[in-house]
Length: 454
Image 1 (cartoon, rainbow, N blue to C red):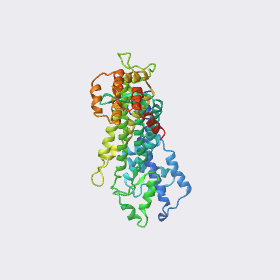
Image 2 (image 1 turned 90 degrees about the horizontal axis):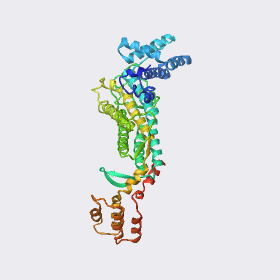
Image 3 (image 1 turned 180 degrees about the horizontal axis):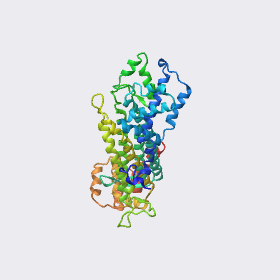
Image 4 (image 1 turned 135 degrees about the horizontal axis):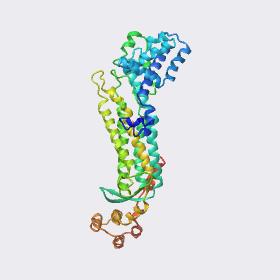
């Protein structure tokens, strides 16, 4: 049954197969489960504090671990049923754990559930765990797959000459591989920052001062315990907070994802232009249709789809960046509703990455067209000629070449005839006479080699 056909968002509707990885670590279910993990781990942490003098058995810990291990969709529905009454999602988790302890005859620990915590202590760590998993296990691996695909194509076409276009006009030749290597390098540079970005977490009570902790047990080093607890989830402890973690690190992370999105958007735009000029030939996939009325068309749909999803991702990410760091006085709830949409933003970004990969894999370079085009644009050698003239201390080198090439359809024969008239070093003249647009590519191939081998 096509249940997904009723979904409001294409993220888990139309493109559900591309975002399954997101659903596997960022959903309402995973938010509830991670809240339970944090609450249970806090209870276990309290067991370890000598000053509390809690007498517990190894079997007690096994039962607590079992609550987490056996948590599934059926259990999640129980939490949601409690929430229907409480109208408070974190309190529903607390009551659920309270019931589970009673079921397992561990009522003696019920007073310690959510001890000295504010809801945001639980929430921010649960979100931190999910964001860390979403970025490290899903986003980063897929982004590296895109980079790998770009590098493979860059290596394949490292020596394939192509006419450049600056300001939309014919310009100095490059190679297909070098242009692809640029995007691989740019993407890798930003992705490294994303991969190394730390997610912060707080666990310091209602307004960040450990008030309830200290009034209850003044002789315990709560700052050290908080630090250990937050870091146990692979997060960076932030002691300097109000009721909520300030989201600065999350916003830095989202800014970097937005930067990478823009690089991919730039790449998609270029590929769209190259395809429109027939520089790349798209594979004709049997059964696919490009137009409902024009049978000949093979549209660059993957790149177009990627561009659209990047814009959607950037829109949501931009909203996060502009708003998550702002919270009136010690707390307001505006960030709470926003954070629920992190999976949506990364989902859009993931779709974009996967669509770009699919688009690249459909392409083959139209080498004949590229070489023919280069042969038909000998005027691009004007740069080479005037630079050699400068080397030979020729007066008005630039102006001389401008007078014979700018806005004119000069032929290769006319260019060579002009070179023959030049009074320059004989070896320089011979090199210019042998020069063809397709071999005037500088160190493009070497640049590809450097990037691919990094």
